[in-house]
Length: 426
Ligand SMILES: Nc1nc2c(c(=O)[nH]1)N[C@H]1C(S)=C(S)[C@@H](COP(=O)(O)O)O[C@H]1N2
Ligand SMILES: [Mo]
Image (cartoon, rainbow, N blue to C red; front, side, top):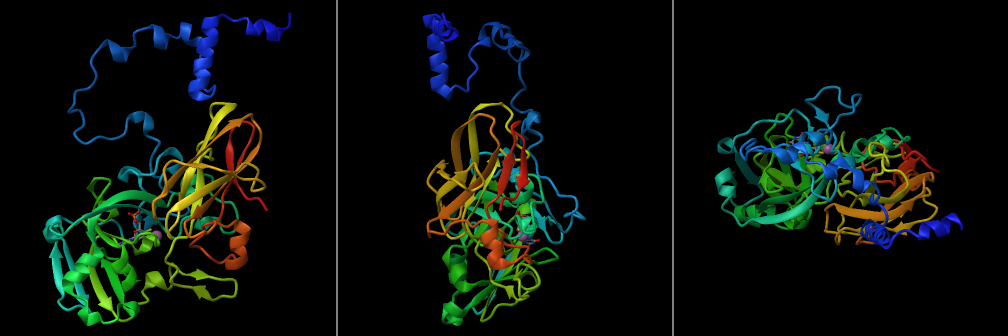
């Protein structure tokens, strides 16, 4: 009698258990050890007494076992913590909403503490009636609620010359995605009256924050009137101080630098200011030495968050959930392809839900991994038909002088042990 035949002679009961387990998780479930497992057969400490009372932490932190899911710095990038940046642990999150507690932060002159009572927002310049709003005033305008990603234009900026940082958190973590509550900027501009502005198509707003840097930026009036928001809540609660409490500007799909925090003034103008943040910074120098400017829109981009260098395959061979994030500043994500062989062949991943305009999309690809080496990539497509470029394609157009707006396809090399590393394929 062959071994195979011997195996098939197992009892009907264990056959059914095995089949049920396989059906539930495509063979990923453990089925055999159940009989002797003390976690099943013995009463555990947590079931033998009382747990914590309901008021142990009036405002909660994540459970201690998740204490690694935190923002991190790159030491050589963050010389000091005042004019600084940190990174969202995207490798350890799932879904699309970024909890404020671990969303990346970028400040030019530190995060300021501004009480609602001390908050003022001025609208001046080419308006019929210059106005100043208090926080309480803002709360009386009709509200809207929308989810958007904010990506710093410098996200992935260290990867232009070659594979640098070993982790999705570091290469792609200057991004967060929150559900904002606020008042549309159009509502406030119309309250001030735009008769004085005349033709809106060649007008601008200059927006600045209450912090010492002010982070002033010029935004075309058409964009300001289209979908910008004056936000005071994110993910249901007040903005954290670091994200601009009590009020920040939301500029959907456009580079994070324009999302002014601690927003204090909006001036309607007949020209852009050409401030520091839109000339010496946040412009892209090309091979011939000239620079692109007004590169506001964040092009479609995606990243596999697991497996990735900080999130190796830990469970061995068999069913593997490949997952990641995709987004586009031009609209909704319509499809994400995943390659396991460095871009030679592609298969379409599953979007967790239909893409929302200018918000993160979560994608999944369920594969059967048998320990083979992989060069994992993802490639996003948006509703305009734009397809995320390879590193080579992007370098062809933009050269190697850029820092900002690197939206190229990323590669993780996964070895037989399930470890992943940041690599480049040509
Ligand atoms: N007032 C003010 N607004 C600001 C900044 C700043 O330093 N001051 N930094 C900008 C930059 S460069 C980015 S990427 C985003 C970061 O927003 P976050 O800190 O909420 O992640 O805020 C922008 N708005
Ligand atoms: Mo930024």
